Length: 140
Image (cartoon, rainbow, N blue to C red; front, top):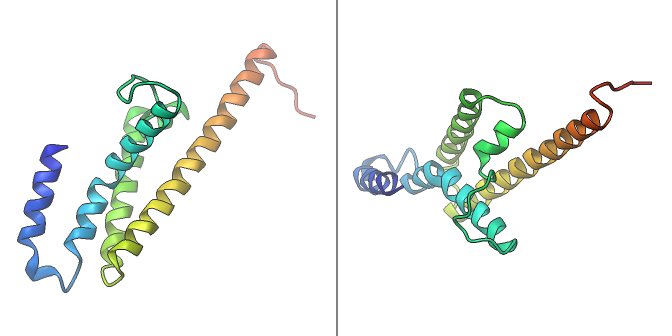
């Protein structure tokens, strides 16, 4: 985390000549967006359940992809693609106010997390049904 922040600040100071083509601050926000918001989301969930913020569990996004049945490589690839999406979107919106871009990033992140949660609950329900019927399920 410290290295990403350091390199982000260095990038911000190296890019005054490129501000016509993109906003360096929005690129830095996009780079740290998933790790920061995933960590913040997990901390809030843990604290809301009365647990310490560093309590070990499977609430982070990569664990949620693993719980959906993706392997480590595929889960990492999806997260990298999501990260690239945020970076490219923030570059494309370089003329838009940074607060609007950050709000849009947050809305997209919230939509992604709610969708993942919905599919996790469906998969959990299906596994429970299959387990309770002994693995045989009849469809009418």
